Amino acid sequence: MQRHADLGDRVGWLRRALLRGLRTDQGARARADFDHARAVGLERDLQAVDRRAADRFNAWIVAAARDRVEAAPIEAIAALKQLRDDGGGWTEARGVAVAALARGIPSHAWTTAAPVKALGFADDDRRVVTGDAAGTLAVHNRETGAVQASVAHDAAITALAVVTRKAEAGPRPPLRIAALAGGAVLLWDVASDTTRRHADGVILAVALAPDGERLVTGRQDGRLQIHDWSGALLESFVDHAAPVSAVDWAADGKWLASGSETGAVIRWQLAAGTHRELGTLGSAVRELRFDSASGTLYAVAANHGGLAWSLADDAPRTPLVRARAIRASEHTQLQLGTEAVVLRVDGAEERTLASDGAVTAIDLASTARWVALANAHGVEIWDARPSRAQLPRDRPATGAAPHPRQRVSRHRDRPRRRPHAG
Image (spheres, rainbow, N blue to C red):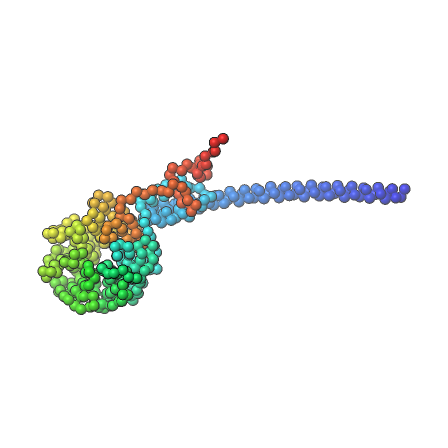
């Protein structure tokens, strides 16, 4: 009997243990289910927070891009590339992208180590020469900005002249460059990589003859001098009564132009050894530019006014207004103004390439195909031909704005997928 009692106790104990284990398992499952539900809910809450953060971030990016559309459309497009794929605002971004592309963006853009103060196209417009605030002269590939040759000066470059010489192909570009810095001129034969410093502290302006064998300088003492490339003095003129602040050499090599701090502009005929005073601007002459194709000489003054004269009869043409620099060809005119850079083609079509006043230098390619603009960050190369901006057909993975024809969902502002036919 005792044995049966012990067995009954053990069975009872086992039953109670099993019941306790069952209750424990049920409690564990309940706790597990509860923890899972909490985790799912927390994840859902975090996702909602993240979506709201992504929406706010995208809204901020779109607003920043919209603010830059007029002044710097390329910066607006670059900003839109930072949009988050999981955020909203794509309809607004698309509108900003359309506006930026309609405004125009450069074909190429590259940065420089220091702000560029002067530039010019060279070598059939395949290269761009820059002079910067650190005193560096550099020859760049037009498309990539890669530096192909460079030389350092001891002062900031404020102006430069460049010519392409007829020479057999070599490892270095066949260029000759005259750069003005600190009242001196640095002469650089790029092909031979030789430099020479020309006069110290007295030169205000410089230009090169089309063949690159001579240079003309405007001096502080009012003299206009012509030297050969080696430095020998060829001619000296003393007809200006004030410092000569601007010079230019016509593309045919037959004419020179000079302007002084008093605003006087003189045109020189080298073969005949004669000159003629064309007129006087309202303030010091800051730039002179021959356009042989249209037969015009442009003069820009320090007060941002200016005049243009016909080379046929020296008659003045339309005055310049709010101009800091000008480049022109037969059908194209590029003007750096006080507030914008404007490109005009055939006197009718007008494009504003920059409107924030940050451009420091401009140039128009000899073919009038390309425009170069310099600013504090680097150089932009624009196509001067009439543009027809187009958006890409699909929204790229980088986060750029979708194509205008792409359908947008009502709730998440995201592209819909069409259902497959059953």
